[in-house]
Every structure is written in C-alpha cells, then in structure tokens.
Image (cartoon, rainbow, N blue to C red; front, side, top):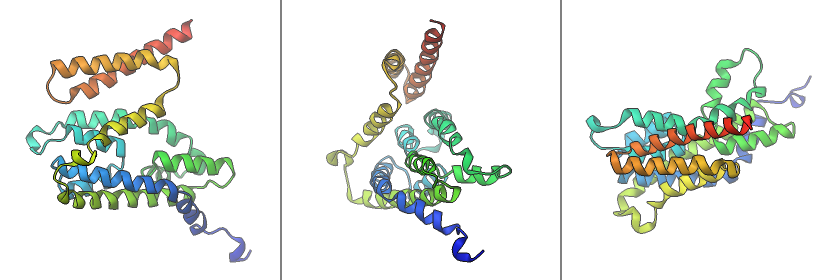
Length: 238
C-alpha cells in the first residue's frame, strides 16, 4: 500500500485543530480575562503558568480566584480542591463518550489525551465521531490547540493586567459571574432543577452570612447536589 493511501497521524491531528479554530477564539478571550483578573487577585506570573498548565480548567480556575489569598498560610487548599472537583465532575461523563476512540490496551494514551479535553473540543470531536471522522488524533489536535491558546492568553492577560489599575472599570470583574451564568445555562435540564437550585442558592446565602470566607460556594453546591439527588429519587419512586 502506498504512503498516499495510508492515513497519517498528522492528517486527522491538523483536521481537529482546524475544526476547533472558531471555538478557540472564545477560549483566547476567556484566557486573557482570566489572566487580568488573576493578576488583580495577587496571583504571580509563575503561578498563572503552573495553574493554567497543570489544571487547564477555566471554570475551576475562575473559582480559584474567588478563593485565592496572597498569603500561603491562609490559602484554603481544601476548599480549592473540593471546588475544582465538584465543578469538573461533569468530565467523568464527557470523557466516557470518547472511550470508543481508543483501542483496548490504550488506557495510558487515553488518560493522557483526556487531560486536554475541554467542553469545546469534546463537542466538536463528538460531532466528528457522528460523521465517522472522529479519531484520537482529531481529539488531540483540537485539544493541543485549545491548551496552548489558553496557556498563552492567560500569560498575555497577566502581562496586560499591569496596565489595568481597576479591572472593574472595564467590567472584567463580571467575568466570574458570567462564567457561572453560562455554566448554569448548560446544566439546566428542566423544571426538575428548580428546587435543587433554589436550595443551593439559599444554603449559599445563609452560609455566606454565618461563616467567613468562601465556604458558601462548597456548602451551597453540596446541599444543592443532595437536594437534587433526593428530588430525583422521589420522581423515580412516583
């Protein structure tokens, strides 16, 4: 068989990267905003590089800024880890749908590739799979582009942050709120979510009034999740 007839790794890799270019533009804007806000929160450039490079989870990183303290002794490590875990639990389901891309025995390759999966690259790869064009290389191509873009723009945002004395004057402080509004819209499944969401909001408000710090985020999320589980069980019993 000739080389021309043999699909090369680079072909689907670059196809995946090209397919993700439209969404990567939004990733870039998102990264710049996060970098600017990170600088305002007292996160150093090295910490920005390490967090973006090792975590690569925009929503979790925005939450981290709300919990961040510039003094290591007061940094809430536990809440930071729990918040990131709760927010990113959805990836257990998202990445499970990509399992068919990997042959038996490729667990290590699959795990490493899943690290650079984002909501955007997952959706595009899933669409390609439905058309018979989705491959591990396709997923990797889009993931690498999104990852490098996020890391680079976070650094750019942090650098630009030195020229912005007050991010609030540019409306950048609303980015944190906007992040959760977008996440909530994506999680909305119907009227059955109303009660759990109200319970979560009430728990968060009460906690914020009674307990100092950012524990209201975790407690609201956990109480809301418990309420959702109970409501779901009641619906199935009925």
